[in-house]
Length: 163
Image (cartoon, rainbow, N blue to C red; front, side, top):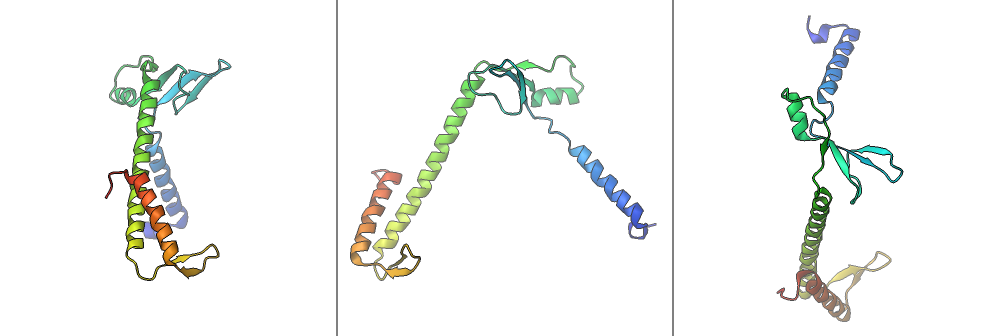
């Protein structure tokens, strides 16, 4: 009997069993880390995110521990002390990620400022939207004002050495 010829009840049951099995296989990610720490009221906290800087914590499960359990490794205590400089490492990583994001945004702003300056220097009839949303022809005075603003933005985002 093919799948299409099964009674509706049996088809639904098979589909239900298939999706249930798929969900069971997905399960919890093996590499997830759980942090154990005490809050200001001395209550034990379990979180997936590290606690605030300056608070001592213990890593309950790491990717290495999960791999060892799956490979039939030791069944000893799952708690492993965190690295002593973990908070400093996390802070340094967060700072470098922040600086990288600032650099990316600054580079994008530089590109936009240079593009705006190039468009303004083309000359011809330029138009812009006013505060009401209407298109208005740009006067030479307005164009010069915007060129000065674009030059300031190029200097700000691209540095003083920019072309």
